[in-house]
Length: 450
Image (cartoon, rainbow, N blue to C red; front, side, top):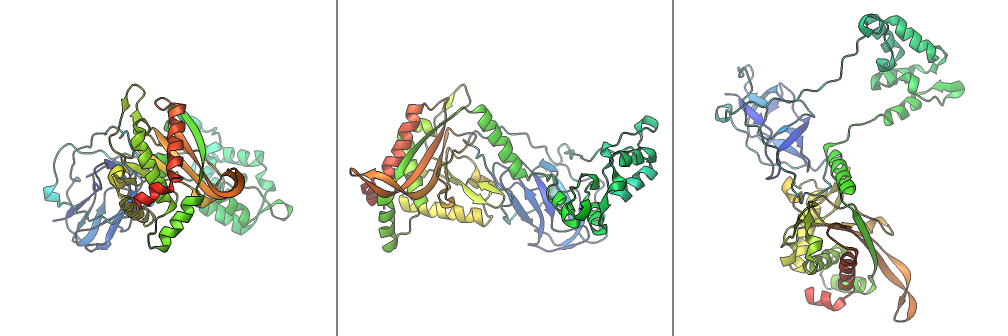
């Protein structure tokens, strides 16, 4: 019996996804453990292995279409095996409410190979069928002769007004369009024209830089590079959530300068003794301690009510290819300094290796965005939806500063707190930022924690 491949549920928060790439095509042999397809959720892109052996008999879901989890996407079986007349049906997944503490930035290409067993056809549930979305460009109403001329001249016909029956574009319309745009005066190298045809570039929109205004290959290559490209699902999610956040949350910013000189020396002493804490570890711990003191900064509002969180779910922004992910350190307030270090290292490693799962990036109550390694003086971060604040950490730089009544070169790091002004007033925001500063500058505190 043919086995049905489904879009698996890879985490408690995953309700839908899209196949971004099939690693097998119809007729290909499939072994247990082979990567069959790659799916993309609003949290990650993950590779799915097969638990079946046989041949990929049929692909039911094309790339780029978002469907609910458990939707049938293909069949694996023996060559020539008869398939059901219709794909198995699954229960539609109800649209969940957006989690209030969902992270704002998520990855596009985090790759994982989850062990997901795909059920046999006979075991598939039989509720109402899921109708897969259909998509496709509108049909251009153009005569065959006109279409041939468009193809020959390598132009885009969508801007041509048709004079034929029912607005159909005829050959005369194309010729008039070419004449009005001075097509006959263009000088195009054969290689450039060939490349433009291959890449779907309208030759009339290519800026020529060759001798005498000749369109060259590099001109077409530039046009290809400038073609609009669909945003990945991750970038779309980032755009949607952060636009919503910035337009609906009144952001208030407060910056303070932290003297990191003594802490950097203390950290070096720890390193020499075999304790390899990072600067980020100290920042995360200082933030966690301050959030316990200022619970309103660890809260959330929907505009009419405030939800106070009893625990700190600390988001830690990590830069990855084509975006940013925010793995979450759970219950940070009960962790020791060493435990916080160990967990943050594991999460950062999983993020960079593409091994984070959707549940690893959901439920943060406060986020730290550290760009200290990027040589920046200061920056403002956008609050993640579902949170009341985010801390932006800039680079530590040698700076003239007053210390002990004298001007000296000190290691200064600027931090900027972005808060939701609906629930966090300026005074509270300033007090929180200074609390983080005070803790980072308190070497006796770090001696007790490390």
